[in-house]
Image (tube, rainbow, N blue to C red; front, side, top):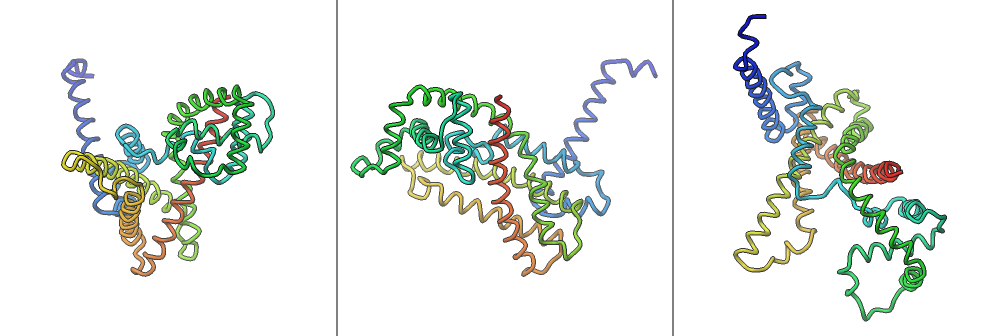
Length: 303
């Protein structure tokens, strides 16, 4: 080695060169990913890989940005939501109640305790519908919660530990969405002999882009709400519910996926539209499966 290579100036110069080179590739990759949907996958299989960040590294960069800055909790599901969410709601309730209480609990009692726990975590619903007649489940829940106050307290303590652990696990487990989407696309594209290798790269790029879209949309929607509060002093009706925001986000995702699918697979607009609908259904199903997977991984990680 040359003596100059032992100097601090040389080391700092190497760091700067590596950072600027890596940052340049990352920025170029992000720009291409967002504004030229599907092009990164085509470039990858053309062999033009050096100017861009590798797909997995790009996904983890988008993942890091999302979980550091996002205001939408799309991938992190709290325990009280998991216990009320299909599928397998009954199985999840029994499993959690038994682990929280430390003693066997039946499905009926588990459902009643899950209802009490949900209401304790969502106190705003306690004042809703006070004049309505209680349902049979609500009546049973009232009896159970009075009788099993200690179990409910143990469940609340368990829920706090669960929410902390699932928040950390969700950041790593979100990678499972990539093979889910790749396999879903493969089912539709078998007649066209599209291999899982190509579809895995496409799914990696697609989910990296979706994470960034969720990030940007969340901040834009929050900024719009804050602006309306500042100018008008109150939120308009369309900002008081999640319906309009979800619909707008869905249209953005639909438009992006259509462009990415058509650019990468070179189908006609009819074929691309059909594949886009199929892909949207796959995204929904994969998110449902991901939440179930996240639940079981979190529960077993706590024990």
